[in-house]
Picture 1 (tube, rainbow, N blue to C red):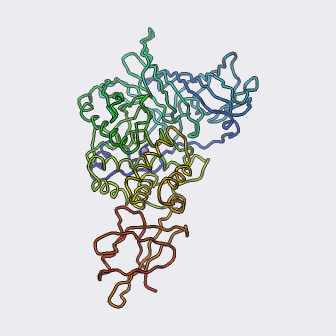
Picture 2: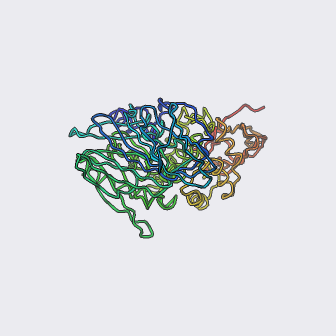
Picture 3: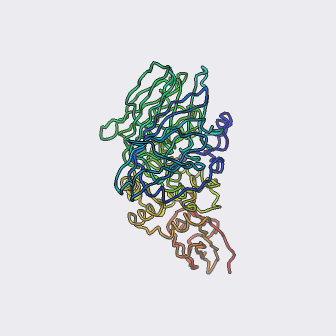
Length: 547
Ligand SMILES: [Zn+2]
């Protein structure tokens, strides 16, 4: 998702003129609720599919529906636990034969099966629910429904829930580490409105009772927080992207009717985005489910095969629409490669922020790309480690997930100093972990095994320590020459860091910094000519006194 300093659209527009993107901290999720889960009643099953039916009545801010859930028992079990916010009532849970008894506790509920479910067996049950779901005050930074109106006073409904979790609107196992293999949403809305969800539209049925059913299906694994709904008096635009192999990907755009002309022109850049990301990361991960942009009454969100778009058709000073590029970048990093725990969220935001730079590189060249990422560097705080504590629904308090995450990858490219190897590696990363749930450790091991550089100590420092490593140096004149004394001062003592510095005047070459002081002659007379390549390496440089 994206984080921004405010939600006022005018403020947003003004700020975008001169700031890149200033992401706001996750603390603004605000209403994230802490409650006790019972791990043994969650780790004993795997979700195979969700099939949600949802009738939405915007004038009452009311939803009612059912989720038909199929699970597979990982071990013999009698009971399992799922999640649903207490604002929503459960009327019954229907098994294939009988109703299943359940007990609710705050945000969770437990099912008690009448007989033991054997390891490997599948069970299907339907949870019927209704109520007034929580309303987002500041989506997508908090979470919940957004009940808006378009300029013609038609209902315009959005939903974002990455922070608070999808159990704010439907019963599910609300965890990043268990994705449904397939899912569907049957969205029931008042006649005249269009309901849009993830994946492909299988059918549309106008009923006699004043409502229309839109039946959407997703054939790929999907993060539960990415299942979403959108309702408006939409116009539907269709286009096709042809990849370099000549294969077709359907592009579907659902936009407010007033914006059709703007969208037709502006959304052409979705093809440039796809071209760029397919070049660096491999095929768009959801050809089966198609690609969509859906206009939302909030800024944006990475909803899989249904990207939420609310950036008012604006390009940034680099000539692209940040929301189209960033949220679609998440299709590779977050939606295809998914972190198993929020502690590893840099996999979503760091890689996606880095993808913005690669978009600029593909469209406008390497020099412009370096300008782009350089503009993000000053926002890095280094106040807390990138990787947080596991298993506690960890929410960060700064933006380093984005900018430092991107800069860590940019620095790795600088260290490897071999673009063929670097780009093969990140493309291979997408192939290796395609549609998988991963830990940061798995990705760290991958980079160590596929590149020429052992990044183990590097990751220890950059991901698990808050502070940057410090390059300490001083220069002394001796026999008419300048001697550079240099060492690395880092929490991780075993770190050996190759960084490009001016070993000759005006030209960068590698110098490897370690914890021990080393000396090298500099062939230039002015100590002020000593510089590090700040455009490619994220390190702190500190001149110290000669001792
Ligand atoms: Zn994001």
